[in-house]
Amino acid sequence: MSFQRLRGFKDIYGSEADECARVEALARKVFGAFGFKEIRTPVLETRDLFRRALGSDTDVVQKEMYEFEDRSKEHIAMRPEGTAGVVRAYLENNFDKTEGLSKFFYTGSMFRSERPQAGRLRQFHQIGVEQLGTSSPYADAETIQCLVLFLDTCGAHDFEIKLNNLGTFEERKVFKETLKNYFKPREKELCDDCKSRLERNVFRILDCKSELCRRIIIKSPPIHDFLNDESKNHYRQVCEGLAGTGIRFKEDPYMIRGLDYYTKTVFEISHPKLGAQDALAAGGRYDSLIESFGGAPAGAVGFAIGVERLLMCLPEAGNEKTAGENTFFVATLGETAFKEGFRLLSQLRAAGMKVLMDFSARSLKGQLRFADKEKCRYVIILGDDEIKKNSFILKDMKNSAQKEIALSGALEALKKEEKEHA
Ligand code: HAM
Image (cartoon, rainbow, N blue to C red; front, top):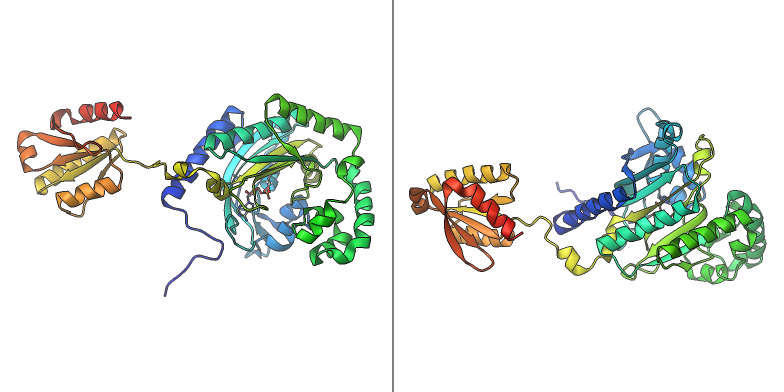
């Protein structure tokens, strides 16, 4: 019997696993400098948490969530995104009362049962941040700056930022009526999904990706005309804050994003290496979510980046970076040398050095070939002659130079070598 991965699920290994670790480490560094602290929330949550947060009419909730009844008949969902769980944790752990402003970052697997294609998986990884307990437009600008700095640090240049202002749920009531009046006479031209959205949640039509619907959407009344001064001022200050940091963005009055919790600022980052519809990262403000989970009214803003998509946007050279490169390789000839080599290997590793050794009794030539494949810079060669002299040969794989070093001073000599060629 043989088994295969599920469709849309992926094994990550080799240079891709190294790259994942590298971008996660960079996220810790960049987000840490902005004052974000790590949070790890469960992969499973109650189904209603996501229904309430993301909206029952969204594609994620309607078509993509992995849901099941557990053994005690509770309705469970595998998290399709990170924000809802973070807000739940913020309230459940009383951060709203003890901390006020909380700044979290997270990394982890998310699950959406979408049609798999390049850059679209059923299990994917997100790196995200959430600021909870702030209504300041400067928090929006800071969040976007943090995202931009992180992408630049990773090497994903040439991305484009789109920005829009969705106002509050209250302001959208009138807007939705106007949208209904606009789309109703054009109902026949809409896709089947949008026909049903017209009655259920007309706002969702604006997120439709179908070519035909988009042509109608871009002539619909823009949301800005329905916003009050407070929302408009907030947006103006976000734009000013971004301009102050030199970040360029494009305003898109028809961008609404696929989740219902957004209020006021929304943004999306696209990259030319991804398909036209696939965003590299997205986020925005969600000022009503904390309250809708039972907390006191408080503003919040955040974003999430798709890790698999991020890796697709990095330059080739970055992908080839040998993050796991080893410095030394211990090659031995004969049983006594093997035992001495194994002892040296353990000693060097205990001192924190990167060392490999092959235990399959290959020829010296075979061991050197293996060392080359594993990108080892130096090979420590130990044979009977060397053992007799209490020494070993150090071969530099880059220029083939070699020298003899006494076994007694091995650690210091190799450390010096490592430092000189770091
Ligand atoms: P989202 O736009 O649904 O937002 O997803 C964020 C990012 O996750 C996308 O831009 C994309 O890179 C990645 N992504 C989404 N679905 C897939 C998939 N099926 N395969 C691969 N990558 C995918 C959120 O999830 C919000 N929680 C972001 C947020 C945080 N808003 C406020 N705070």
